Image (cartoon, rainbow, N blue to C red; front, side, top):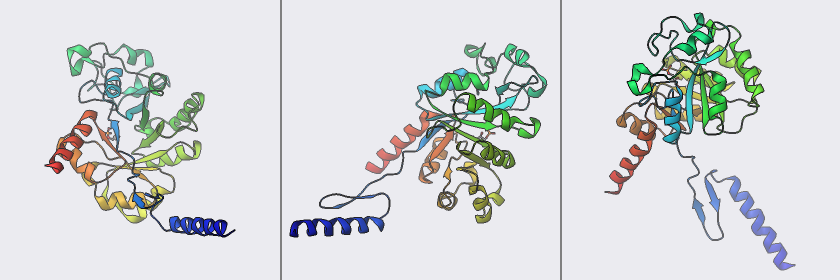
Length: 290
Ligand code: G3P
């Protein structure tokens, strides 16, 4: 009887103690141990590993997988005949051998273009992928961070994306499977209404959007607060985290910039050079050890 009372007492004490401890703390038999439960920083390959291969093509996405990226970032637009395609700029001029607006070309016309030769002759023949091709090829291999580009040009694109994600059973994705983001915050609000279980991100460049009130408004529908790393501060990360949003800064292109972002303790880093992140971490560790 005495033993049972003692056991209950210890149990009640441990449970009440755990209520007041930070979430990254566990209790062992003898000690209280600090555990670093913070997830390792996720690596997002911006338009694929686009530092090495032509952006938004299979070559760049495959390279990202090879470099162990946790996500590929893909830009989504719509062809003249209503197919969702992967392309960053509003026109095909910079990244293909063609010319014209994406929205004025049919899928057949877009597919005829060479989307790789501009980056190097070894990439000649790369094609503009469709969004569904990307889902099929990569969903089991890595996360997909999709960026809806210029949604105002493509009325109804949010509904169309929702239908496609439902078709592929992605309307209730697993953690890290898919995130939708855009610079157009109205579009993201709409997306959240259409697909409440799909994580939503807001892309941020304006200082005004770093104010407490703005952050609170974003947090009412967004799960990710994704600023240009040039406006990133520790305080901003903490403010977004405090409202329940993770921070994925972009687009980080140098060792110094990666080092800076690592110090900001964000959940991820969006970069054209996915393998730089691990290299930078190694450099940092060996510098500290010396
Ligand atoms: O993921 C961030 C990114 O998509 C925003 O930058 O230059 O690709 O439009 P940008």
